[in-house]
Image (cartoon, rainbow, N blue to C red; front, top):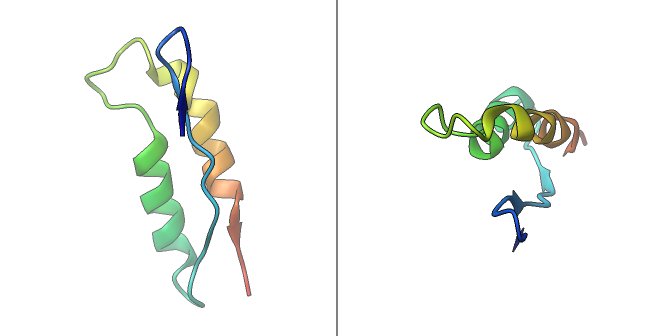
Length: 60
């Protein structure tokens, strides 16, 4: 995890879900990287990262 000069945080997260638990892991990872509703300035900027987190869950 790194911070930048504009105070955004970059998180690279790789994980493997147990069989049958993929949806729960996707929901957890999305919630973890999606900006808080109280951080109005960050919601649109971080929404692309939530899509990235959902796509990195591996099967098998």
